[in-house]
Length: 74
Image 1 (tube, rainbow, N blue to C red):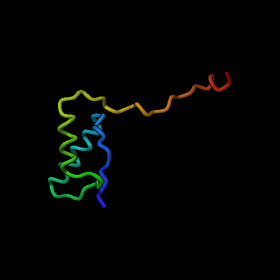
Image 2 (cartoon, helix red, strand yellow):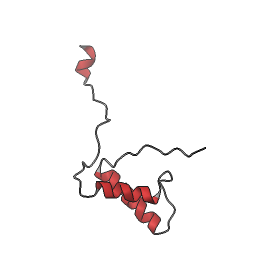
Image 3 (cartoon, rainbow, N blue to C red):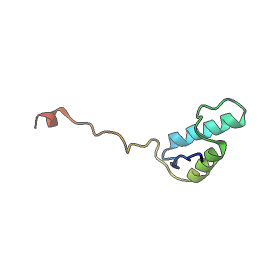
Image 4 (cartoon, rainbow, N blue to C red):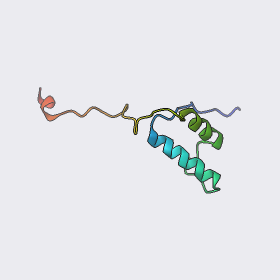
């Protein structure tokens, strides 16, 4: 049986890029990883992909719209 690979998801925010960079530095220093589902090769690929791109600080694409109280009764 072949091992299934997870779908590639790109880095979409500066915060996420910082987390991936910290994880790569942690592994290169020989410390225990915190993100166990990703290899060093994948970390390097993700970081190389996002290098030089202007990314938002955080991704707000999945946040729910805040409903104001007036709209509840209309």
